[in-house]
Amino acid sequence: MKKLISAALAGALALSLAACGSTASVSESAAASASSEAASTAETGSDLAGTTIKVAASPTPHAEILNVAKDLLAEQGITLDIVEFSDYVQPNMVTESGEVDANYFQHQPYLDSFNEENGTSLVSVGAIHYEPLGIYPGKSQSLEEIPDGAVIAVPNDTTNEARALQLLASQGIITIREDAGLTATVNDITENPHNVQVEELEAAQLPRTLADVDYAVMNGNYALEAGFSVGNDALATEDADSEAAQTYANVLVVKEGRENDPAIQALLKALQSQEVKDYISETYDGAVVALF
Image (tube, rainbow, N blue to C red; front, side):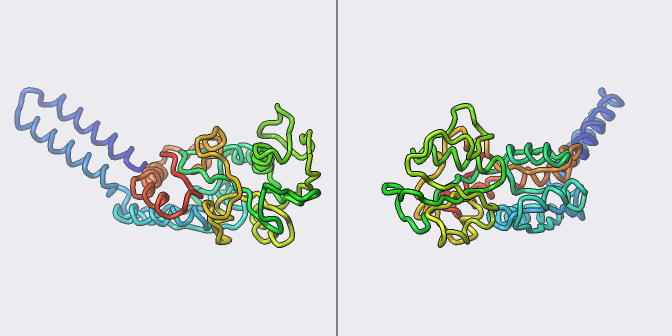
């Protein structure tokens, strides 16, 4: 991302030299050499050496993934300062205020909802991964025998609650109004054969509620932080090929107007590298899936 300035300079230099000496082989050679050297500088990111990028992130998996990108950026002389947050509000507020350069913790629907509700001007730079939402057992261990009146805890933020309700509906636990979509709330439940009680809680608190509820629908990062394995512990998850997986891609976010900053583009390139993709695949047992 930080290569835009050096790339532009390289292009300008090449054009200038070509215009001045189109018939001189020495000039052409010099132009080619200079252009090649400038391109090499852009490729290595050395023009950004000494730059520090400050990013707000959830601890798992976002900060962990950023640490892989951190090593790649360090090879270019770029310092990545990762600031961890355990909630879904402060990372956006400090990005809006300029205290950090970017954040990496959320999906696009949440970002859109946050901007609308808080008057912020934050935009996605690119998609990195998605985390399948899962239903995890609490006092009840199976979806085959759901107790009458079972309590199911779900995230209380607008988009994640709708997503949780859609997952419950996909398992036949409830039926929700067809056109509710990503705005679904408990008021959109049209059939509830098990008389389940949906308890809305802050997403980060859900793992701690499992001893008191029958099931909890949790975001992948919070399930991971609590030591759960998607492959071994989740009773049901969103399908990897589903529309939801694309809709809820976790994105790198900046304040509007900073999308093309060279430092931000360098960070995006590092996050969408093969090294990061391999790390995600090898580390998270299907709880995190790369989208590049």
